[in-house]
Image 1 (cartoon, helix red, strand yellow):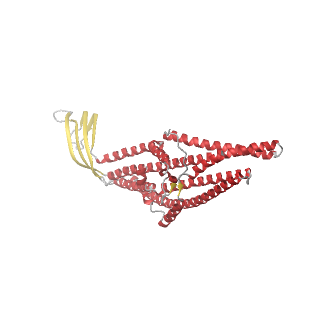
Image 2: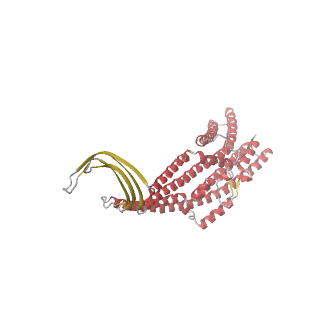
Image 3: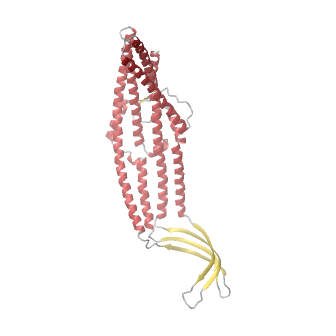
Length: 446
């Protein structure tokens, strides 16, 4: 029984050659895990956060349309009813008073607003671009979580195989210990310890199984994933030598060549550009604004022959407005805009420095995890060789059952440790790609 289960465990742990990650540069694990690729594709369409972000992008589109409308002719209709009194300042003419209905229509189109209209359109365009960049960021976060959950499922699947086998071994030990206790060959403390070990193995098994069910339920709730997951493959096996060579080359070439294409850097640069456009709009408030105007109005006027005579007035030409003084509001808003722009620029520089530090740290961690992975692979292989030798010796009667069982547990622990480091390495590679992949490329593949 044990030999069959252990053979199955080794096949899951070692994996097939098709799952060896032999690329010379890092790539996402879904390249070798088709089921994960399908989950990520479904997330792109159905993740709740992305659905909400799609609405935000639509809002940005309508704001852009509204901003562009400022450059088009504007038509206004108006009307009034009531009494109008005209008082002539020259005393030679009598004042006039009339009652009636008046209508007017007015067409205006901006001619020169000192770049304020273009600045408003530019701001709306930057807002739309930032919403697209925000979608890239949200999608990366969602995919990172899904990759981590899926790799956890694969790791837990191997853990379940190990935990089930460990529980069986512990149960056998507990049965033998109880028998020895009844015969007086074992102390009560040793018997109690065996029962505790068995209860702990059962608890560990239940916890891992519960974690599996939670992740699958999350996939169903958030993505509508209904197909049973195939978890009969291990996490991909990175090519340790290739990764170490890549890490060394990356450090030698520099860790900031990707900064100008980083999605969040672009978004923050857009915020600075938006503030510059806002300053143009603010400055235009105290400059002459020139418009083309055409109007037509119907009203009443008193004449020498009769009162409230209907009239039709038309006008076509150019008008200008100039806000000469607004209580220093514009000057205060200019200072505020300049200070905000300066703050955003400093925050951007600090963020770039933080990204450089993160990239250096992630590459360093990838190096550490890769070296640890190499050690754990060697440790697991050595443990398995020792197990096979002791199994042969046990078959020949040269090794006791307790010693053999200890080796069984050791080989399980060594292989599980290697799988854990493998998953940590894959997630570190994911972090580096999320950090350095250009926004434009990410938008295309995501």
